[in-house]
Length: 74
Image (cartoon, rainbow, N blue to C red):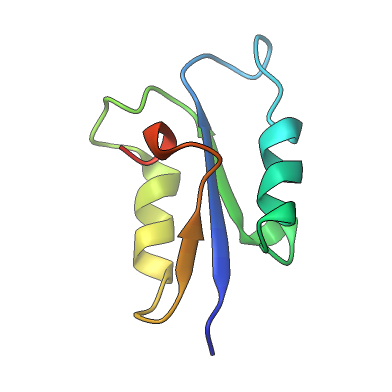
């Protein structure tokens, strides 16, 4: 089954940025549940992004990963 996952990230902590806007946008893009959204407050320049790596382990070949901006994934 093709499943749609979301990834949201911020370069600062949760006290400075609100993740809810990205969650709402990911739901609009087709992510069915907030439990299918992986998010973290960490710089995208780091290679040890725990939630991003968990997402990559979860997805299967036919699944889709959505992000509100390409820079969230890179």
